[in-house]
Structures are given as structure tokens and as C-alpha cells.
Image (cartoon, rainbow, N blue to C red; front, side, top):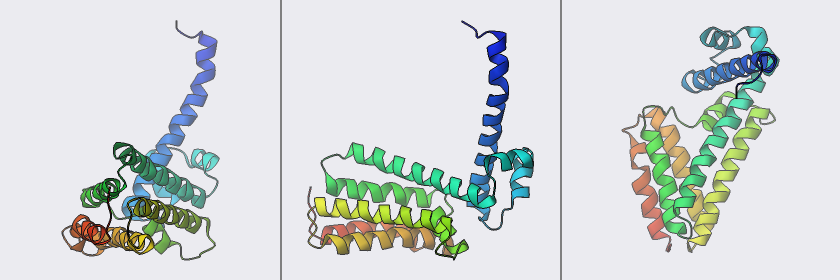
Amino acid sequence: MPAPASTRAKRGPAHAEDSARDKVFATARDLFYREGFRAVGVDAVVAASGVAKTTLYRWFPTKDDLVVAVLDSRNEEFWAQWEATAERHMGRPREELLAQVRWIARYIASEDSRGCAFLNAAAEFPDPSHAVREKVARNKQTLRRRVLSLCMAAGAEDAALLADQLVLMIDGAFAGSEALGKNGPARTLQRAAQAVIDAAGTRG
């Protein structure tokens, strides 16, 4: 049954506000990743989104608030993909470890990839006390913790060493894909990871 006219009228402005916020956010998320957090100003986001600056500031009082929100979104997206991969390999930690590296390698090789948003942010925000750096640290700490958990479950002889090697390979591939291109050393991430996983005596 259609909503009464009075109800539709009440929903209209709120829906428009949500739509404007989503548009600003999606535009900022894309521009920050493609062109850099520091290089893209609020004016560029406003111009590209077609949304008034007052609307942007209503949702994100400062540019840093917008950057932090974008990183939160990318963090959620990364771990959603991780969890989806984990579900397909439940009870097989070694196979899951390989599968997690596999999808990350594929993402790095994709046309849409411009490296790791968190490593990019760390380079652009050098102050370790900045809120952005907190988001970066949390993402990388979680990555290391989850990789370590898989290495332990897979029975690696030195799980901590294997976890550190894999995290270095992943972050190195992200950075290397930007410095030397997707056909450079980054393309060997999956093979290199499998070699160290095999050498670590993993099982399951």
C-alpha cells in the first residue's frame, strides 16, 4: 500500500539528505584513492559530486573527518572480503591462507587498484598521533593478527616468522605495484607466498 502523502513528504528531505551524503562520500572515496588524500581538497569533492559545500560540512565538519570515514569504509570492505574467503575454507587454515593471499594478489593486479589505501594514507599523514594513522595501524595490526592466527592453525613451525613474511610480502606487493607497475615484482606475490607457506611446514 502506498504511503500517505504526508508520510512521503516527511521522507523526502531526509532521503535527499542521505542521497547527498552518499554522493559526497562516494566521490571523496574515489578521488582520495585515485589522486591522493592530500592532493584532493574539499572544493574538488564538492565540484565532482555536485553537492553544496554546506551539505558536505553538515556530514563531515572537517576534511580529516571525511578521510577517516573513507578509511573506515575501506577497512570494512577489506575485512568483508576476508570473511567471505574464510567461510569458503573453514576448517582448512593452510588453504584459507593461500586463498586470502590469492584474492589480494588479484586485487593488486586489477585495473582499479592503486595500491593500499592505508599505506598511501600513512605516507601522506606522517604524524603518528593523527587520527588517520590510528586507522592505518588498526588495519595493519588486524592483518598481522589474522595472518598469524592462520599460520598457527596451519601448524607452521615458526608461525610468527611466517606471519611477518606474509604481511611484508602483501604490503610490499601493494607498494611495489605502484612503484614498478603491476607487471613488476608485485605479480609474484602469490607464488612467493606459497613458497614460504610450503617451506614453513604448514598442513591442513
